[in-house]
Image (tube, rainbow, N blue to C red; front, side):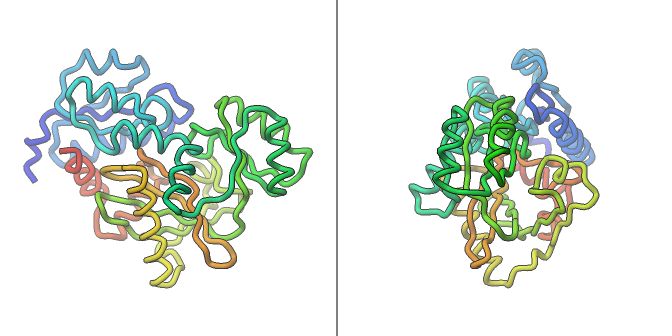
Length: 302
């Protein structure tokens, strides 16, 4: 791979979403790795919007901007109008993948397993969902990542606080049946599913603190599944990725219930690249160190 073919690479990170802190860490890690690999890379903190993109010349972009404005198709559209190649999925797949409700609808249309859900706009909607599905329930903002604004609700008295928390981040929410079992994640790189990672935490669920701050989160790699189970998990994750039209790379989160069935939870089209992040762990298990991983992601933007 001739790194000169990349030209000047802008690592876009930061921004103004609720995931800004994580994005800054991801972008810094990516930038250092690209520069160490000999790529002519520099960073752009998109806190001032697309103005920053227009003021600085570059040839292609490595998107490390998590959440709204970076992972939802908006940045992808701006880069396409500028004629700049970029990493990851295109406008439509990014927009759909950022919207948990739209993602689940497409998966269901493709016959892929995902927990039952209801869209929520009012507390009354949530109360109706609880009556329909029973407890426990997961309450989620439709357009946030990193488990921001999410709650597990086990009793009617907790519905209103969970609704209020989710509404702080999004007017569109969903209530989802809780799958009791083991949690897994599967990274996709190009058209290949990487080794599956098993996740466990003493937290109520795999929340923001468990993902980025806690020292008691456990990552299983190997994942603890049998060879056939891991292959099934990888195959389902790749189907979920392809159903949304994703490109380049992504990470699919799943649950395995007590009957051994896999359930798709969500997809991340700009996964984290921090010291706690899962894609670098999976890539390392597949023989790619962090530098090789970011170079490969960038290569897939060509």
